Picture (cartoon, rainbow, N blue to C red):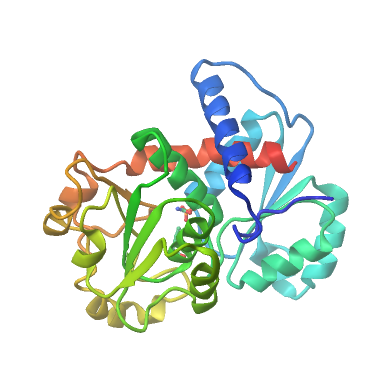
Length: 302
Ligand code: CP
Ligand code: NVA
């Protein structure tokens, strides 16, 4: 049976481990200049309903480095944008391609595509989840801290797709997650409820960013306004004012805490320039790891 990557709900700790072991090997091989054309002759279709820099480049370059190719399919320029059903698109694309990566709005669209496709489907971000990002983030934490086990991650800001994927990861893996979100901007309640059921109380939600950040090993944030919410941008700037990673907040984390951001960042909003460009920031390593993790995902699924 084909495997998809739609979120972490179906994943076991061993699945994460398999991806990261392979990521480490692929990263080492690339640094040593060793070729590894494991996906020669394979084609990935990449459907984009939203903008992207990192996700697009890392999947495209990843396929190229593995000997395959990737097709950029802006849904506006395909028949999907003119109303062709996802079911027909999935069935037909399965005849041409070996895998599909999709970035879109509704999680249900990704699930529908996966239901009708006979090839693996990868979630490249929805309004609900961004699993590929959090796989790269946790890989980066392993590199910097030796392991994810027992690490405390403080997530400051909007209870969005990034926050939801962090919670799904913490439901499966033994690290501590403290989120600080303003009232009305909490993470998805079903994902929180699932965590409560099986997550061994490793996820805590606070209103005060200082409460969440105290003694954290990792300080993480994301934009206040995600793609698709542009009309709320002004209102969000007011509501999220105190949910900013700055020197003062960093001061209550552990001395050797690292600062992460999925990027793109808005300096002066969710994070100050001195912190994101400072010595504790690992955002560029984090972005680089998107490439290595993507290659591991592609190899495993395709
Ligand atoms: N972090 C992330 O997914 O970046 P892009 O939106 O540039 O792909
Ligand atoms: N939460 C952001 C993440 C971008 C990578 C968004 O959805 O726009």
